[in-house]
Image 1 (spheres, rainbow, N blue to C red):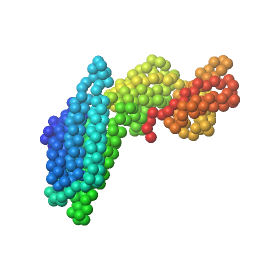
Image 2 (cartoon, rainbow, N blue to C red):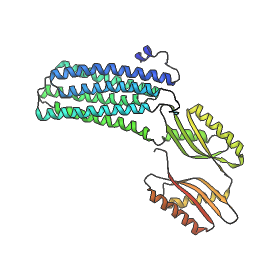
Image 3 (cartoon, one colour):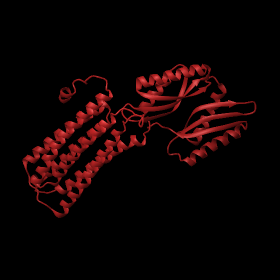
Image 4 (tube, rainbow, N blue to C red):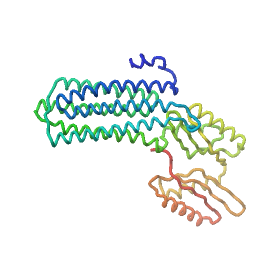
Length: 390
């Protein structure tokens, strides 16, 4: 893009560091403020002159977009602060908080615009057609369309939650401004004033956009399931090392851009010995940090892949489990033996639709069924949910 080459030419083609990410974020915010302030002032003045609630509502929506850009700028600056004693994981989540503030600003504008539109419907008013209005609204749609692609490009380049949210908001503004334009054209062609109704419709669209932005922002703050692609990437890398039999219970926590902590249980062939297992664990953690920028902590589970009795028992347990819960799976299957008894230790993963009570009942039913088949076998079963998103 021309603006990017003019203002950020020193950073084009370079690896996205925290400093470069901050530069792009500030650049995007400044462009957003300038464009939205221009559109807001133009539309509010024009809407007042022609008596259009829809145009004024759209103008205030652009004003909220300018405020959002300022909030985004503050959020990006704060999120770029390095880790310190009080915040050892950095300040990356400030960006999520900034995006949440943006969502509330959008919702506030939506409510105000709906009130104005409803007042126009019930109290009436006088709408005046102007070709200048049509030209301004059409130009505004083109500018907002450009802004949407601009924010989307920057957001993808530097992995910015705020920029991606603002891109969605800008694309919604294209349709919102189009609605105001339609009300002007309908008034010109049919002498029908639908401005109040369009104003209400615009406010509803703004409200929906605000809810979407809030939803996208709250989810990483609450804690999201691991995307399937990231899960496959990490487990595929971990399981590629010599001596690794399998892995499970991968957890990933995000603290902002490229600030992720993870833990995973890795099954090692017990014949390697503790020293070799420890050496492999350290190598995996170092490689994951260097290649994926994820701080990974590994819990090692020694297993014997050549234990034929364990393989048969696991196959039987899996078949039995499917009779109780078809979607369930087994992992971390181990056998602990002494002269008198055999202890089966394994985890069962079930869908989130299975209640806590049903989990306890499932574990009890499995244990009782196994006991009936062989009274010398005891079980220690953990029933849990998956941390992977579908």
